[in-house]
Amino acid sequence: MTRPAGSAGSDTDAIITLTGRFADRDAWQAEGWCRIEHALELIGTRSAMVLMREIYYGGRRFDELARRTGLTEAVAAKRLKQLVADGLLRRRPYQEPGKRTRYEYVPTELGRELFPVLVALMQWGERLGREGGVELVHAGCGSPLGAVVKCAKGHEVAPPDTAARLVTDGNGADLR
Amino acid sequence: MTRPAGSAGSDTDAIITLTGRFADRDAWQAEGWCRIEHALELIGTRSAMVLMREIYYGGRRFDELARRTGLTEAVAAKRLKQLVADGLLRRRPYQEPGKRTRYEYVPTELGRELFPVLVALMQWGERLGREGGVELVHAGCGSPLGAVVKCAKGHEVAPPDTAARLVTDGNGADLR
DNA sequence: AAGCTGGCTATTGGAAAGCATAGCCAGAAC
DNA sequence: GTTCTGGCTATGCTTTCCAATAGCCAGCTT
Image (cartoon, rainbow over all chains, first blue to last red; front, top):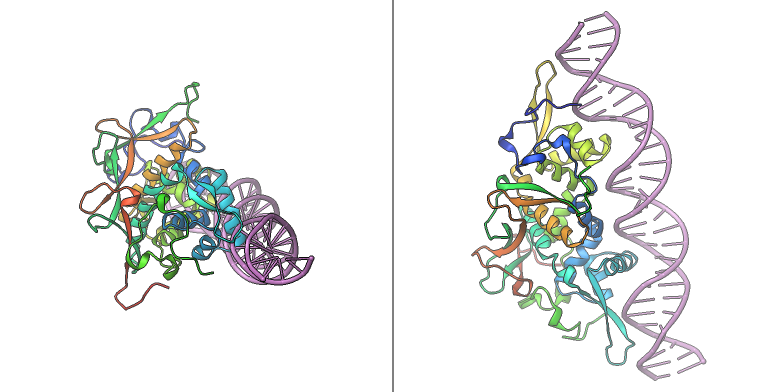
């Protein structure tokens, strides 16, 4: 299908502004290139997300993580193993007196960098209107947290002020 | 299992600071209360996420959305229907000359508010090291976007400065 | 009226996610 | 030794996700 130029919906409700070669969406596609898809390959399951949530709440040990997420031990073990393999968590030995050496799961730098994703999801989940729940606040002033989109130079950016840019891999690879 | 007080891992790697009644994780659990889980019920599938991504890139019509996400038409139709039912998208009639009236999918306010989630995921996905891809930048200055966690009063907040707070539903309901 | 087309819908099947239950194993307690 | 326990591991099943393919239908064209 060839889309008549400029006819695909009014642009009054466009969210991201596509500029340059991106303006014609028929000329490129994001499949396989998309960083969101890459991210979802690692944390795209419910079990991975709720385990990382519990890690953020301070859970470290296997039985606590399994119990508090409501996952079965089998699912928790499998997913924790994968999160370690993917570099979000690290196994760290510990030993309680009179007990054998065990391992607890602590976040790596990559795991910590998931913070804005978790906060953004919690913020959006609040919008869904179900009352109650746990809210994150700034320990210093007590105000609730939110994720704000800013550019590297510090400007706050709303969706219409956003443009998409192609990043090549240096090997001359191109979109599509 | 009763966890000996203060023994569950060193707190040097704690991410979120739990205060007050939250300090004892055995006294509460997030299952069912968690806003992240609520959010994932709506956008927890890969198909929902990539469809919303294409909506952000400006895709509006069924065949374009299906084609650019790489989803089959059956999956795209089912997921779009669900996204409309959940209030992230809205069906808007359009008619091209000589064609019958059709519907395109435009984001609602709720759908637009997903922006920080998408940006945070893209930012984190970039960290995974795979080269290439589409990057979002500020249209004004060209710098790449990121999601920054701030409190309502405008302070930037790092994970250790974060506290968790219980929000009741006004009916005296409590955690667990 | 007949045909074409875009936007779905239905069916089938395979893969993955997740639950329930049971079993295994290293090592401390005894 | 033997027992006990926490942390997994294995097995079987159900559900959900998604691909592939085929079919349906409103209404525009001719």
